[in-house]
Length: 260
Image (cartoon, rainbow, N blue to C red; front, side):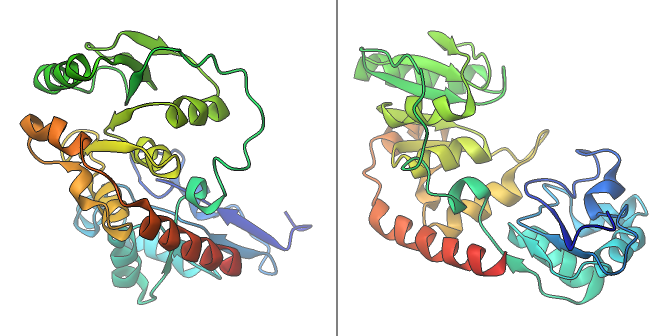
């Protein structure tokens, strides 16, 4: 590492203690050369809070690691507050790399086998949509005459599971009638392909409410959050005004490029 001018860590939940091991690597603790700059980009603590860091007695160690950074960038308000409280610095907030790059406009050609029949996408880890949620998704698909393609994991209401490359995912999203997801990146894929979509925000278990709610608020898309499963169809029928959203993303991209 003595040959590098800078090392960057990011993005996503790189500072969530229960998510990455060994955690010190993601604070660039292995960079011992003081001349080498330490930089974070769109880093997140996930659903870890300041209180939980204190509870597990790692707050002081995390603060020590954070102070060693030359530049700090996070991706959500929860992470910003943690950095503020621990070391008294106000980090900048940046978008996920998928939003920072001009997807899907600059995608390479893929071999994605897009169905001829209309379909919707259900994007989430296997089995995370419960019986009630799956039932409402199936009702919507039947009403609209859509096949349910599952990407990312197998779901109880899916018609077909699609195993595809990261670039092929964009092709499937581009041609979908609508999207239902409960993940951060499923939401981002929906936004960059400008789809009608609905996002379930999970507060328990996996817990992505901190960063996912923050993302949707920053983009002005809070009404796409499913707070009542029975209203899923109503949300999916909403026309999403993407022009102001894409303007915000364009401005945020410039902030990202300037920072890096």
